[in-house]
Image (cartoon, rainbow, N blue to C red):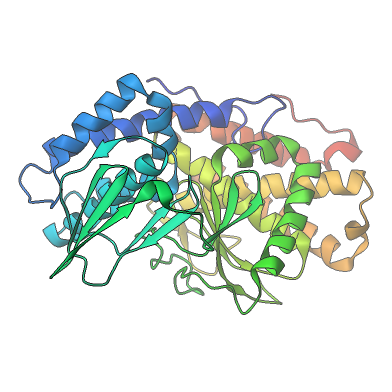
Length: 409
């Protein structure tokens, strides 16, 4: 599949299909990664019958592609698949863990979607199975050693006994709460990378409500998303397409922290903050990372993305150009949101903190753009992203719409 340089991956045009097109290509690669696992893992003992899994996946692709690709796009399945693909040369122990995580959730999601599956034995499965599609969680007994899926049932084999679960009777639990549409606040997460942290001032992304109630989280996130929907409606439509869950990782009343992972498209990790605009900015920021991570999963974007390191306007530590590009790609739509709020004379714009923050974002975007443009060696596909960033930065540098500037594409 040939990639076309994207024209509006940063700030989408009305009726943009860029993110949809990238997601389609991404899901095709997910299918390819999944069906190639038996060959790639032929020299290890993965604890799962991968040949049987491949056969069922190929049959679904032919007979019920909608069911298969609906599951592959969920981060509960897509995340473990990408993490496994990145660890194929790792230790056999780690490979077995990731294979069990992937297979368990692939079959679990399919079974709860009504697909009859036959898994064979899965050795050392995770003790909590998560279905985003059905918003269900099944917690297995601590002595569970193997599981198998048979049609609509799961059989868990322990040290001394086996237990059978009728998955058709499983009900939605209290781990997933609807923010809106299909976007969930999730109090459980199977991301195998969540303990890893790139930011020097954070220590992972374990689930944590920060001593706030679920209702407080939901109310604050809905208020923030209302701002995004009003002032970035095109990007808001992409959120509905691509984002699956927000995972809470604490509360801070003075600063805000958030994260996302290239391997786990569809997840946003964030702390709660009392200011709805701060939350709206964080959602736009991390969702934009999800979008550009789609592209980085399909193309190098920059030939020198990870070396050498450069000063970053938004981080205290030196960053590769990959990180600087992610920053400006995420903060240009934030700047666009601020501009539209000013044009609408929104009451939040009158606060001195808004003015200071907008100036800071402008300065950071200018510095990051200059760094990327001066040093980045773009691939043909990546050049489309750099060209768009350059156009929008020039537009805002000239004062935006109030100055009569335009951002022609």
